[in-house]
Amino acid sequence: MPILEFQNVSKVYDAVTKALTDVSFSVDEGDFVAIIGPSGSGKSTILRCINRLVDATQGTITFDGHLITPPDKSLAWEPTASLDNKTKTLVRDMLKKLKEMNTSMIGIFHDIEFMDGVCDRVYNISEGTFAV
Image (cartoon, rainbow, N blue to C red; front, top):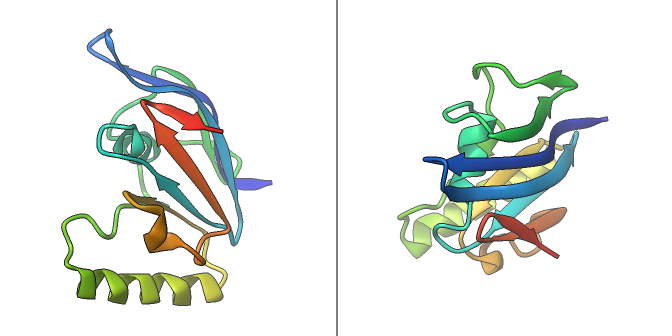
């Protein structure tokens, strides 16, 4: 059973702006997953939906088999925003150690090279939709 699962999740802001469109993915216990995409693609909205800073317009999000309720835990994180390259390398090394410890995690990143060789799966998002 997945520890985190998005099923057909969409988010529309102001009844007009589509941030996410029918996003589905899962994170199994021990998985280390990255979501990669440019600014404005929907990565931060995924974080906000997981942490209930915003509610999805449609679809379901479950954590450990339960519908997500107001946050008391977080699997989502954007660890490298606005960091210099040296600090990013330190963060990447820390993430590798967490993976070796079988930590379940979903991270949000802007470039795939940063997480190359660290993640079990990488989802690419563009304009609110996962690219295939």
